[in-house]
Length: 154
Image (cartoon, rainbow, N blue to C red):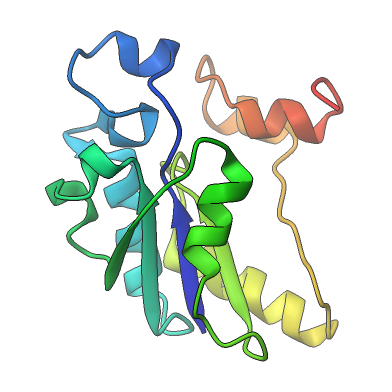
């Protein structure tokens, strides 16, 4: 299947701590940018054939995106970045969408998620990590998506 990695968006409070970063997707964790970690996990997953990375225009030449098969410019809003990433991909094939700020994503997690979605014959599947699980494994490390899963941002 194809995968689209969303690494778009403007600079934010996280990236402001490191001048010159396009946004938090390019923040190095252990010397490796977040988006590069996500792309590497997708590349290691046998379920993934092609990776499309969507990022700010100024960041498209970044080596952090080197593992992607294709780089596309992001839009002003997430939905526009998603449209850019999906453009031209076969609509009848399964597609995996990943955000770029998942530093602990693994090929095994991707395989488990894809297998679960396929087994249930789902049209759309959305993975979440509960705040309590994230906090137990990574104490003191904030995670916006986990907070959303607990309903704090909904």
